[in-house]
Amino acid sequence: MNAINERLLELHQRGTPVLAGLVGVGQMGQEILCQVQLMKGMRIPIVVDVTFERAEQAYAMARVDRALVVSTNRLEDARKAIEAGRFVATTDWQLVTALKEIQAVIDATGSPELGVKIALETIQAKKHIVMMNVECDVTVGPILRRLAESAGVVYTLAAGDEPAAIVELYRFATALGFDIVAAGKGKNNPLNIYATPGELAERARARDMSARMLCEFVDGSKTAVEMCSVSNATGLMPDIRGMHGAAATRDTLHKVFCLESQGGVLTRGGVVDFAIGVHPGVFIVFTTDQPRLKHGLIQRDMGQGPNYLLFRPYHLCSIEVPLTAAQAVIYGESSGHPMRRPVSECLAMAKRDLKAGETLDAIGEYCYRGSIDRVEVAREEGLLPLGLAKDCVLKRDVPRDRPISYQDLESMPETLLMQTRKMQDHLLA
Image 1: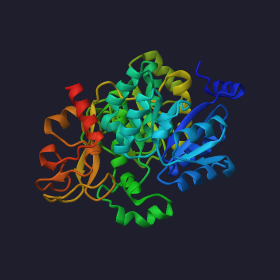
Image 2 (image 1 turned 60 degrees about the vertical axis):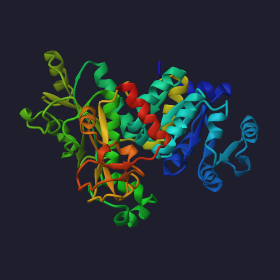
Image 3 (image 1 turned 90 degrees about the vertical axis):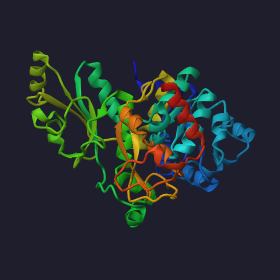
């Protein structure tokens, strides 16, 4: 039985807690570390960031005694510190994968390029990988999941993030045999597909986050990434390119995200989408043709049908992530993972008129935004995946609102992420 609280308490009483390593202590990583310090049966004895000071500050936020923190990039010093019950601050993420004591690694970097390096080395070291890096997941998640299975470890999305929260509802509904009409999330920020970091700088400072990260949310890229991850974990697909993003309230979700013949926006069931005006929260719209169950759903105040709503009114982001690491170590289970073959692709759409010779910047910046379409459409049109766009050089102009294709490119950087994606494409061809 999945009584995670009881299992963690048992581990605490035995003195054998789950040991996880954390790479990246920005806002999300800081919250993970603070949460684990409140838990029994789990520890994060090593954290990584770009400077020792940032890693040390994260431990201070988590109320770890500074005298217990060892700052080092030496493997032997880190090992001795952990064996002595101390904590390690480091700038070398490879220490985490090299330490035999660490059972799971949490990637909270948000960088697809760094994420694939961390994931591959973690899997090679036969440790579980908790992927908060959804941008990496939608680019190479299927092959990382296969490699993890071959190594006997778990590749998993992170609890609390919207994809895993949606998967939680999806697993519940499909286990009961219901038919899924739509799975989605509320849009947490106003949608402006042409937003740039420059115009969001003041808002970002007020929220203590980078303007690039805020822009990734506002321009819809993050929503496309998250729903692509859900799609590839469930087999549900976008109804149209970019999804509908219809306006709704919590009470009308099941009346909006249903078939056109029923007064909704969908041309078919089994889709991923997002709602404007509902936040926070994630949802599943489901249906059944079983008369007795329809009656039972009415009696339980689920409405008159034919569609019914499951709504999770919160997703606590990084605060829930430690449970995924514990679940992977204790039960060998994921909070969500890609299917063996993807069904959707996250696309790079020109945010402005792009010119030949330009070098593309990063997700959430000035050149492009994320969108989503079915994988067969992306392959047929030769469209560039969002996660591979950074540092590509254009050989011809691309007008605003058009997807960027491989044929538009003069060159692509030969990164490990690119190489891994080529392996995935070859494997699935």
